[in-house]
Image 1 (cartoon, helix red, strand yellow):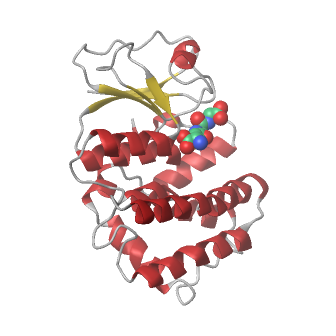
Image 2 (spheres, protein in one colour; image 1 turned 90 degrees about the vertical axis):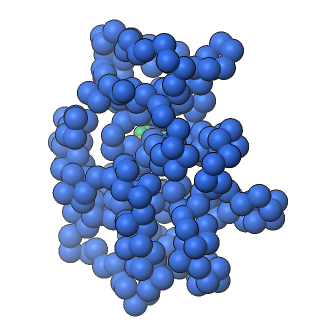
Image 3 (cartoon, protein in one colour; image 1 turned 135 degrees about the vertical axis):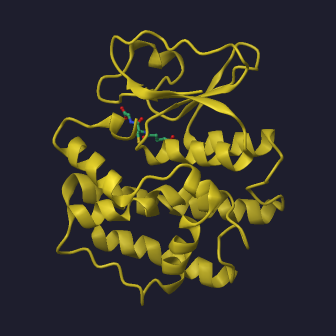
Length: 241
Ligand SMILES: N[C@@H](CCC(=O)N[C@@H](CS)C(=O)NCC(=O)O)C(=O)O
């Protein structure tokens, strides 16, 4: 069960069944929240979603997310029902707590290398925001993507996780799902070069077919429409509700 409409200022706290399920505070178009959905879905852990209107935040959000951001994951089964924040912390917690379909490598070196790669992904996330907010940064985006093209070549596997998607893959996918938004913002300049990124081109196509990715997917048209409404100052959070 989940509340699909985004709750805003003045909304009462959602009343959820006392069934012990995890509660994910989310926003349908947030790439960081998507990381948490993908980790939960990869583990097949049932959970409730509480969607939050991030323009007019409900007063009680602070009880679960002190920085007033999503995602936050409330651990209803734990003493005091604490909530976790930060998408990567949440995903790593889920990976450790629920051993099925392990996502991060067990080997300490490989694990550390995957985390370093995710640190470097901030080149992409920062460029993405800069493009959308300021209309610049497209070259920086491609330069940051070079690192991932080279790393896939070095690993010699279809996914960063090996033969099937793992932690890195699910943590970076949300930004690839949103490539269309960059094209929408910079239609003249947008120049994704399949010759420069042959591995990433195939990688994106393959990952799009993954069942976990499909379990929480929005089309380019839906992302574009969300960003169009967000830019106009009236973000349509409930586009898919
Ligand atoms: N570092 C955080 C970033 C989360 C984040 O920035 N979420 C955005 C939505 S995509 C948010 O909640 N923004 C609300 C705000 O900043 O007021 C994470 O990885 O979870």
